[in-house]
Image 1: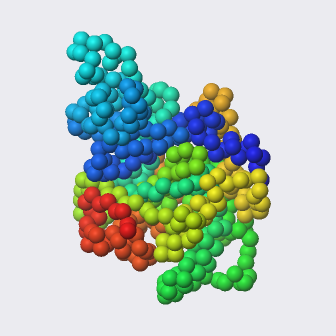
Image 2: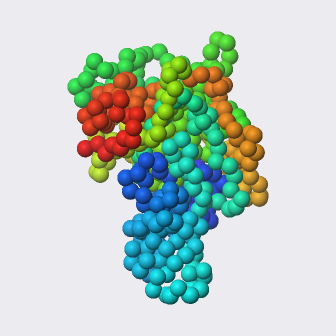
Image 3: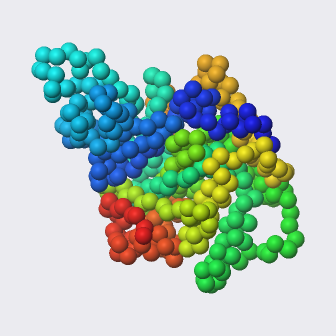
Length: 426
């Protein structure tokens, strides 16, 4: 268990907190680029700061504070100009650096605009995602993780807002013991409740003979984070890496756990779909879809959203509470990976406190050209990941999920997903 002080250390993400300072060394996805096709101005909450993301009429992105310096009107209602964003109240205009460039009622010769500035942060688009950096300058490079720069693929983005702290989401990566139970036995129970036993995954019952998770799995720190290994007769086999500080990687998926504030997390699913190498792929827009909650406002299960891994994961994360009280937890041998991640988090916090740069901060363009995430070695990818991605779900094992049914009904199947697709189920 952790002390109260340690739990606060790991979960608070405001600007002056240790984890908040650590997280500000990294680029975080804050939106799908196609969200700005629907509305070029979008509210953003990141690391405890309330911001506005916009695309002006020249196509340039900006991320600025959400409050006009004049009379505190929210700039989420701002008007995109050829350059910058204009406050709807009195027309003050701000550029992407947060500098006020125009005050229509102050006169053409006024020097007042040059003395007014609001917070602003760098933003960049990569592979259909918009990333933001809230740290000090000079900003590190936006990491070109391999799936972002892999060619001849289709992509999609899923977005879900979770009413819980980022850490309980990220710690799930180091917990392979939940796979058989949550995604096996509970999944079968959910399908039973939904009257679909034909879709159950056939696994051994709870009473069957078992071996400890430590006889089947192992964990170790590697250069990008924590690696989850499977123990085989030929030794350890890399299974799934957790990329420090807040990314999970599957075969063709990335999952970002973006801290909005202490009690809310934006969960971002990024999936690629390798295409026939003989047929060139041209995806002009990367579609996004929104993921519904699997828990209602009273904290009860929404069974129709619990027939898939993502819904099951979000259920356990949210029902642990907005911030888990880790002073009351009881950890076992199967939790060694979680303890290892907390040790790594302590170490990286201390590096930042001592004035150093934490891991996974890249400044060398040659190193950043394509950062391979093991066990991927640069070989051609052949299959989509099993746990996320709308295109995979349309034809994959979760094709009966309500979110997929809504998507298929609205967009008439997989072909529609090759253009800009936006889904708000129910």
